[in-house]
Amino acid sequence: MYDQKSINNITRILKKKYGTKPLTFLKGKKDYEFLFAVILSAQCTDKRVNEVTKDLYKKFKTLKSFATADLKDIEREIKPCGFYKNKARSLKNCSKKLISDYNSKVPCEIEDLMSLPGVGRKTANVVRNTIFDIPSIAVDTHVKRVSKKLGLTNNTNPDKVEEDLMRIVPKSAWNIWNTHIISIGREYCTARNQKCELCPLNENCATYKVKKKRNR
Image (cartoon, rainbow, N blue to C red; front, side):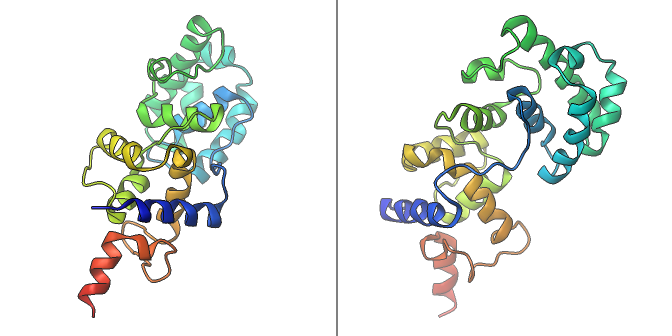
């Protein structure tokens, strides 16, 4: 399915193209603001989230203001992000729990993060990776799709994909894997239109190798 040489080549190419640090797609000056942005990004574009949070954080300037806000007020602000009723409830309840259980600070342990309303494993890993610089692999749709095309996993369950990647990707590259592979997914390996010939990872991609062999 893969060989270590290909993995090493992939990580080297990613670092050369996108840098040695994780990219930041979502904005948030405070730790909880970034956490909330990740929660809002579920099934929504980062661009839209950043547009929404720009005004959201002006209206609700503290965790307490989120915790005590009327749900309808939060819903109104985040409606463009979709699933706004559930997300508003998550932001409000997450604020309450951060205040009551974590002294108004975003925790770094994955179990603590996942105890927060609206936070699943992917969100927890993004927060650990970005805020705390803790080596973590977050699996979203791009990471799942591209990693599978590269031949690094045969799984579709995000938790299983994460386990596969953690076994074979060098730990030193975990923190860049999420954002750099997302960038590959957005630029070259979209769900509907793959630009395989232009992709910098093509010579290390299992799908491309099969395609190239078939076209000979």
